[in-house]
Image (cartoon, rainbow, N blue to C red; front, side):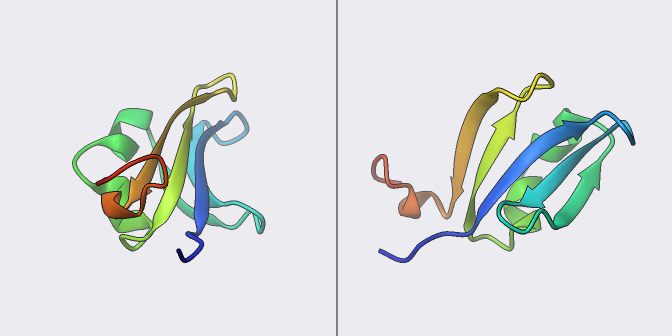
Length: 79
């Protein structure tokens, strides 16, 4: 199975925005005003160009959930 690009959605206290970053490089892919704006209706899927694993973090930095796009590539089960 091909290795998926990994991303992380976390809150940046400095600029008061949620940032979607590529793990490893730290490159900011997209910024959002609220976490709800980032996680609604396929926004994350489009931001990672429909291929990747996204760790969604709470404000304190702990992982809340992880989403895999496309769902069929999720190593934890069938999509």
